[in-house]
Image (cartoon, rainbow, N blue to C red):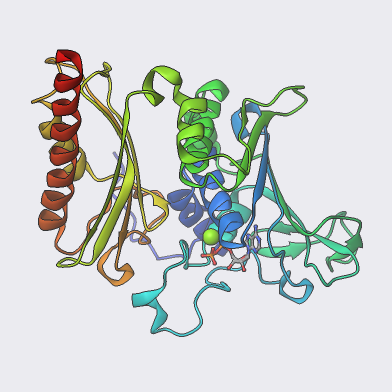
Length: 355
Ligand code: ADP
Ligand code: MG
């Protein structure tokens, strides 16, 4: 080996730095979609329509009927730390809407071609803009990059094409479009269950029928039945509880002792973001050991509202695992609620079979 030459430090190209940072935030199509669904919900959408090609690697399109984006904001939409959801720095501790970093679209635009078409209700027409590397770009080289007027309904359509076209390693790691599509469906299923007032559709590009289609008039239970089937839906117990000592509330549906499955389905939303908490999951599994045959597991959908200042859900889009203040106490209290609900249900079942 040659002796090392004294090296000089060079700065990486800014575009490369941004691409690396973006790849840390957006790992795969399903992450990008989750961020975009949350944006649509933040914008008050009651309809969210998703179209996917090649597991989202070729095309990931989302159309909503939310408030739309002001034409004069289109230059900032894909800029890092540009957000309409954080007005003062103080809001960081109390903000209740889902995302607040203004990093999602910026990241996506560093690793994909992004087109935004949007119309606010009082605007006479829709506007379309193209983005690359966080900035507006012309539709064709040599043209102006200004947003162009076009026809469109109130709401926003975001088209993400050729995800990771400029990150070869990431692209290579995502070998299976059908696996990516399944992850996408899982995100849509969860958000559809948690937002039963919003209609979700998800289909493959060019397909005649949708793989997910929920109605805006659906109830939570309807959407659980639709996604997971009647066998689960008929064995669910509703859970609802407000805890004043730790200032949180919990709502949801959990399976009773009649139902069990090889792998636990655990759908958890905290403050309306889909997250993971392995501590809570483990604790709930422990509650069920008393009711289920060995080696089998329950279905659990829970929505927790915790004071936003006490929960750390927004640190990083790909860090789904969350922690919150008084975590042990809150988990204990949630488990006590489930335990009571299961015991009551089991008691009435015994009673019923005896008479
Ligand atoms: P954040 O959601 O954290 O603000 P994003 O990068 O996800 O950051 O989005 C940047 C901004 O773009 C949002 O604050 C919002 O103003 C606007 N935006 C993005 N998607 C939509 C949408 N579907 N409807 C309306 N506005 C949107
Ligand atoms: Mg967002």
